[in-house]
Image: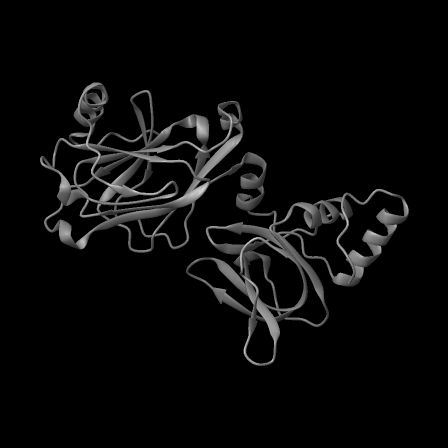
Length: 292
């Protein structure tokens, strides 16, 4: 649903066309993945539009004392032909405030995140071809108390759909899905459920996992703890899935999403052994997982 632009937003957009042809504010500090800047560097708070250029698949934006507006240009180091297959997701910081975040394409605006929205762990996703991010500061009595910030990720549309389909983590995976998950997941471990913490406000469950075998992990979510030398870590899933502590080992697979492990397929390990052996005997297993 389109939202009416805030006062002063259309002049900013029109002014942007002139800025691009002449002077554009460029007072910022960034690397290829992250940007951190301050509205206090503006000479004219109400007219400046800053251009932010980032070339990573994930990173963050942190805008202190927001005034004026930002245009965030996400240009991943991939072929432009592949852009149509990308989904962009943003996750606002817990206390983000001071600006509205819009999706903008050829002058049309859609409100993505309203200033002051309080939805813990809310993630907003859109197709890369749907437009870019336009962030406009809202009028404030005391801008010193405001920081607008969010994490972003660019991912393949298929992966994004799996992460954000409500029923996906709750239903059992087929044998084929499990075998593919072993090959393509960001983490693959054999472990047991030590405890489950339910976070009602965020509608999520945190699975505390004791790791018996670490096959692969993209990030160091699972680590050695204490002097016992045991590997442990946490995996998140939807509260509605009703995960509970239980006996026995599972094969946990899943994706990293905004620095957190998200549950994918998780069959009991004995069931995985059966399907893996059957596929291997037929020469149909898509990849080797290594010894138990």
